[in-house]
Image (cartoon, rainbow, N blue to C red; front, side, top):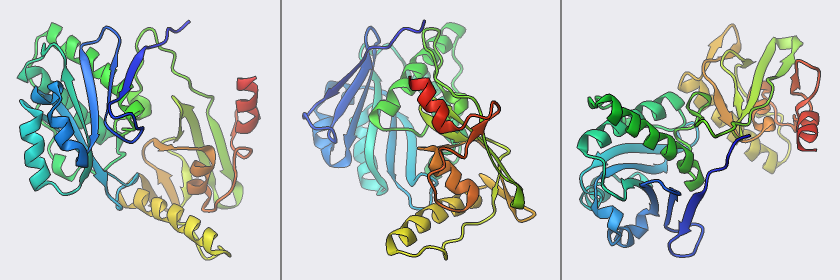
Length: 302
């Protein structure tokens, strides 16, 4: 049976949208997140006056999940963030990742920077225009590399708790020996008249539309009758177009072919991209046993 992880989350100013720190019991790492308007408070913290890696996050309407991201490393967070505050207008939030015992050197952080950029690019959940080149991974000893990868596993576990999902994908799900990753059977959504044939799987709390799925080539918004429906359809159509534009959906013979696993917040959200219409589709996703997703979920929770 899997053992739990004791994640220590501390709201520095006592509010859910404010500065927060997160770590794991008996781990030397610490992650601190802050809004851009909280930089002066962040600069006063001990971990901000050390070295490490960091993630800047902002809004990008053209990105798939509307997220802009920049990943970097520094020998001093305060100095680097002051520079970014002057020169990078896009970001709204920062997460700094440091070692409380300052046990990592520049080589460790260079290795982790390269790995974070690589993972985020492969996950394709944000735009990264300022990380066009993946940093060259630093050469570490076998023991140093193992230590850095263990540190990275804890980072990947904690970042979603701080609302940062840019690293998440089925391939990058953290799977330590003591963890039990929750995944569902694969469910299918098919529509014979236009050849729609999509597959979806719940993995670690997210619904992934799987690589190779056949979906609609475009989204039709003209059927919307009310203004609320118009707005809803426009949002989904916009996401479909973003997925086409960035190559996540490739158009072939008037159908869309999904080229990577794409994360959604619900089965209905995934189905909307598949079918080109908005609906509550927990019943239309069916696994190989003939059981729909809604029934599977109910049975799994009983």
